[in-house]
Image (cartoon, rainbow, N blue to C red; front, side):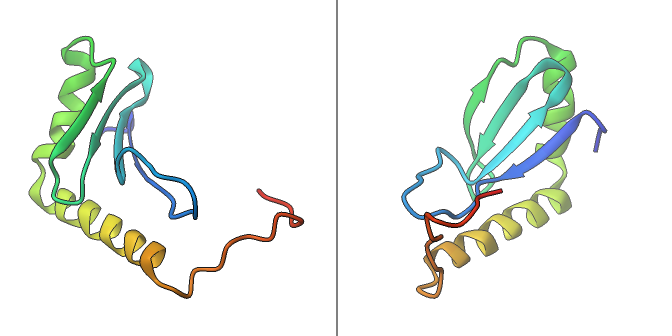
Length: 95
């Protein structure tokens, strides 16, 4: 994976509905592809040329990496669905 690519996962927070659980960013050109837990692309933003799309496609086409990414997203979502998730106290500092 390129150093210019970052994988982000939607954090399970009560009351927040993310557009997608996984985001693949190409940082230098501010391009992002969001994918669901099945690895399907759900949204593409600002992919303007092959310099941006090539590193993102490299991630999407790497079956082992995508299996790891989608597995992590499912694990994170399970925490959200777990009834033991406690809402933060609004009086506490949020970092």
